[in-house]
Amino acid sequence: MEKTLKPMDAEQLREYGHKMPGYLRDLLPDSAPNQPDSFQHVLDDIQAKILPGVTHWQSPKYFAYYPSNSSVAGFLGEMLSAGLNIVGFSWITSPAATELEVIVLDWLAKMLKLPEDFLSAGQGGGVIQGTASEAVLVVLLAARDKVLRRVGKDALEKLVVYASDQTHSALQKACQIGGIHPENCRLLKADSSTNYALSPELLSETISQDLAIGLIPFFLCATVGTTSSTAVDPLLALGNIAKSNGMWFHVDAAYAGSACICPEFHHYIDGIEEADSFNMNAHKWFLTNFDCSALWVKDRSALVRALSTNPEFLKNKASQANMVVDYKDWQIPLGRRFRSLKLWMVLRLYGLENLQCYIRNHIKLAKHFEDLVAQDPRFEIVTPRIFSLVCFRLLPPPNDEYCGNNMNRELLDAVNSTGDVFISHTVLSGKYILRFAVGAPLSEEKHVNAAWKVLQDKATALLGNP
Image 1: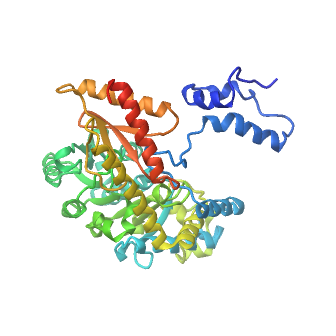
Image 2: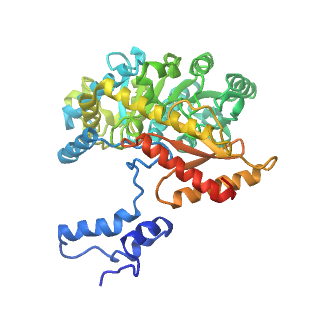
Image 3: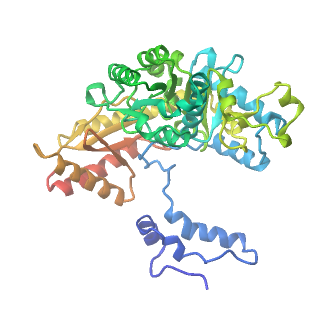
């Protein structure tokens, strides 16, 4: 007999599903059915048992982490891709999939006004990865192999990677996979004096120290829009340092890259001409359903040399004659989905001007929230708002950061427990910070106002005063 969770009704399950790890195992059978189930029965189970345990990332009340956009155009593209269900690892397996990806990545590069070196007409080009984690991994492997061809493969233990301590943890995982010694992954401290951006002076000093003891600097990762606070690393200065030391320079703009289609925000990627690779996630803030992470490189041969395989069963005339792009050689897995279809549909069905308005509206809403926070003397804005993320906190009692951290932790739990809003946190310079990221497609000013009302009410309850 199928298990049930009693005496909870659907609303109770919705409330407690997020608080009860393993709740679903008590609701589903121990094994798959021997005979087909009815479609209606499956839909009923989705409604009663699955959806109550889902965090709704598309909700207009979702302000946590960074957005993961869905849209009609993105959904239709994803549906068509699923229906066609091709496995486009090489050109010959589905020419349209490869050729559309080349074209649509060139379109997006032009919208971002990237240097021509990143376009497919030259030695570079774009490719859709699953995530920014995959993007940084493949370029790190390309950079590793490139430097080892020059200095010898036995020098692996001397290779050093550089980034700020605000860089996404995906870089550390890439180093682990790529065989970079953990002690050679330099995550340089960033603080409020630079608004948590990487200091070029600190980078230069650290590189000089490493060179003096015989190490080999080979990879620098800068971020435009860090995960914690949307800090923007100074690309031009960092790029010049990378170039003078013969290092691969990667720019991670997974979140904030989308904003750079707007002329007023494009200056945040000034210096991108010095980069060897650039990445942004169209599935974050660009109305393209997950997964769709755009990566551009100036030298595609570096990726191909690091990642290509050529077994007999994959050989064909077009590939052997170097007439085509085979994206299997630009990524970790062999197989790949027709992801360019949804990005193409987003660009066509919305157009540049509408996408710019979409981004600007979210930034306007974030500024509105920032203004609300600034008007309440119990709170403070912790870092300057740059895009659509606001970092703030309840002010701690005088000289008691420990108490302040606990207060903000309790406030976060109280707010999220309502189910009326969802936000997340970070820690900056030892301070527990609340993050309010505007970016869900349906969010409007009324949702921002309602979220602020919940925050104020819970703060009042926590502090015991208005």
